[in-house]
Structure formats: C-alpha cells, structure tokens
Length: 460
Image (tube, rainbow, N blue to C red):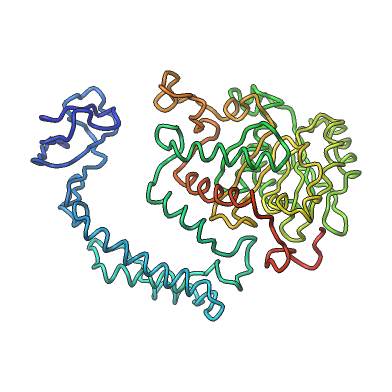
C-alpha cells in the first residue's frame, strides 16, 4: 500500500484513506489509483506491503471490483440513487406486505405448487444485473407469493400478527447490520439486551441471574441441557464424552421435539431422554417422573436434568412446576422450563398461576416472538445462576475478540457466553425491548386472542 499505511491484520486502515492500493495475485499486479478502498486478506500476515496471496474483497466506489473480474455497477457513491431505491422498496413493503398483508379482505397466501412457483419467480442467478424497476417488481412478486403471517386469518404456527413497533426496531437493526460479540461493536444493543434480560428474569421471579438471546427456542433448550451437563461434569468440555457415565434426562411425552434433537446433537443420544407420562390434559405426571428417575438409576444411568413444559405445542398444557421442582430438589437435578410459548402468560394477571413454581427453575426458555409479537426469531434463555456458568461452559476466550485490557468493563463482551453471536441477535433484542417496555403498563389480554387457547383441549 502506498501513501495510506495500515495493517492487513487491523480492523481498518489507521493512517486514513489509501490513495493507491496494489494487490498481487498469481504474479499479476493490479493497481487502482485514488480509490476509496479497504482491502482484507486471508493469511499473509508477514507481508506488510499488502502483497497477499488471497484477496478477500476490494470495494471501489462507484464501482464494485472483485479480484480477477470486470467492474460491476454499484449505487455506492450516489446517495440520491440509494435513497430513491430504498424509498421505493419501503413503499412496496408498506403497500403489499403491511397494508394488504394484514387486511382480512386479502388472501393469506397466493398458493402455487412448487414447479409453477419456480417458473413464476424466475430464480436463475444471472451474471448480469437488473434495472431498478425489475428489482421492484421482484419485490412485489416475492411478497405476492409468500405467506402473510401478519394476516388476521393466519393460524399455522404459534406466532402471528404484525406489530409496527417491533418491525420498526427490526428495520433499524437490519440497517445497522452489526454483530453482538462485544460492547465495542454493538454498544447500544449490548446494554439493551442486559436490560431486557433483567426484566424477563424479574417476571420469572429472580432478582439476579444471567441469560442470553438465542436463535430460537430449540437452541435455548439445547443450551440448557449443555449447561446442566457441564455443571455436573465440567471436565466434559475439554475431555469430551469419554469422561461421562450414561446420563439420563426427563421430559414428558408432550414435550417439544427439540429435547430429543438436542440430546442427539450433544452426543447424549436420544436413548438418554426418558419420556414421562402425561395426563389426559397433556400435563406431566410427577409420580411417573419419580418412577422414571428410579428406573434410570437402577439401570446404571445418572439423572441430571428434568425439562418441564409451560405451554405444550399441541395441547397448550402447563406442567405442574411446583410438584416437579419438589422431585428435582429431592434428587439434586437441574430443572429447565421450556416456556417458549407459555412464558408470556407471566404478564397475565388472570393466568399467571399456570406458571406457579417457575421461580424454582434453574433455567427458562422464553420466546417473545410468540405471544409478545416480537419478530422472528426472538428467544431468551434465562438462568438463575450467578457464577458465570454460561461463559465457563461455552467460552473459548478468543484473544482477537475478548481482550481483557479494554477501556470498558469487559463483562459487557457477551459473545463468549454462546458458541456464536450473529447480527440477528441485535434485532431480537430490539424487538423484545419494545415488548418488555410495554409490559410495564399493559397486561396481556387473552380474550379473543387467536393463539389462546391453541385448541379446545387446552390444559389451562
């Protein structure tokens, strides 16, 4: 690099905009004069003059230039054109997805069979770009043939409706497009997440604890199983499954399928999941839980976790948490409550008794994208633990992200609490922050709610 300075291992060029950028690949030299560019490379850290064997990306305004390619048209550097495109796209979204998509006079979906839909969409990826009008027409086509989950007659999943405040928050977070590993890259969202989790824990009944937002309730449940296993056998993080005896976890036959999938993914095996009987209303039978624990111990397995469900997928049943917590306390077992759907009942003065005993749980999974109308995916894993169990279990202490000598409290760098944190966490946090803000003054009303109860055999 000439007249610019900077380090290929750094985040940005600290010496300012490079005036001349030379990239060497395959013995060929490519020079762009007076380009506003930032280049990165894979490896090649010793080559301080940017002679990198692999080029990741080179952006040149107003063209996009990829290695060994011709310049492609771009709107970069033309703010008027950028604004015009975005305003046009937002107009299509408001008209087609929001106004028509939430109108009872319109269809939930313009259904087409797969082969016909492929032809209508024309999904071939071509080497040439398209005009703005073609792009806008494609936006209309995508919306036209998609399912409108905000429609008042959409009943296919345990989420529905379109909350404009949640959508506004998601537009902001998508525009900022940040990850949430560290405070320095997402200061607002890190603090926002901290407050939202504190509020959710308070609703559960905890004055302290920990937590994290996850990409869906299935992952929240799987993290809970992993945490329970690590708490019992911390050596398994380094030494793996060979250090473990046969383990057993317990859940009802009405549980979410993610419990079985999580056990398989974590190497426990689906045979480790002991299925407890449910009564005629779909609620776990505590007496059978006690019996199943005794059977597992007699077979040489080590019980370590019970997963109760608050709001089962099919029947909407709420397991008797107090009685289950008594069993867990007697046997020293981790109690996880899958309240992905039913957790929001904590905001109902009329029905919150269905979750009596949830404050005795070790962990709770709660999806605000269901009854609280936050956007997908918005799932919180809440812990009563205050010993930093999340970070001890999942952390790898990557030195390029989690330096300990930063100029702020590094406890705000939450990325090491989970295997990975993408930019969607910010959207989930922003959406759920609005839901929790509303919970301060508004209680859920279940009368007339299309998601409450889920069917006539509901157990509430």
